[in-house]
Image (tube, rainbow, N blue to C red; front, side, top):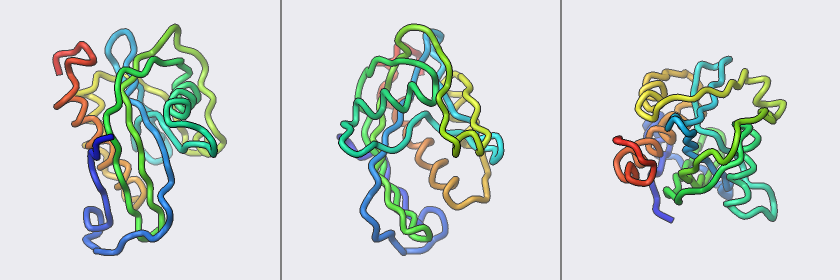
Length: 175
């Protein structure tokens, strides 16, 4: 799988420090609906947007994990269109490393009910659907002061830019 981006404290704080922890394995999806809008989680308590996704459970393969995360955070079953690549994040201040595998997916069937975690509920997570260009704009305009959110922002920008730049033919759009 292609590396889309590496994001370290150098990009956020200017520090050369790196996390020493074993990387957490995570997944995300750029999930398109039949109107070619993508699913985004808006964390209303923080004013930030993210793609649907999360951690891979022990013993779970990446495809099973991304389909589970999509179902939980969007209420939708999905068909995986293609692998996009992965981002690697090293958050030295939190000693957290993460390798996040990203996919393009399309809603399969009808949209259903969200199955949010208690943490997502406490963050004020709300599902919203936007055209990919609008989604990218909303993320680019996010200006959170939270350290972790700064990494999320750069990660999501890299993933959406990858879709717009190199995968428009796979989503049937004119991006």
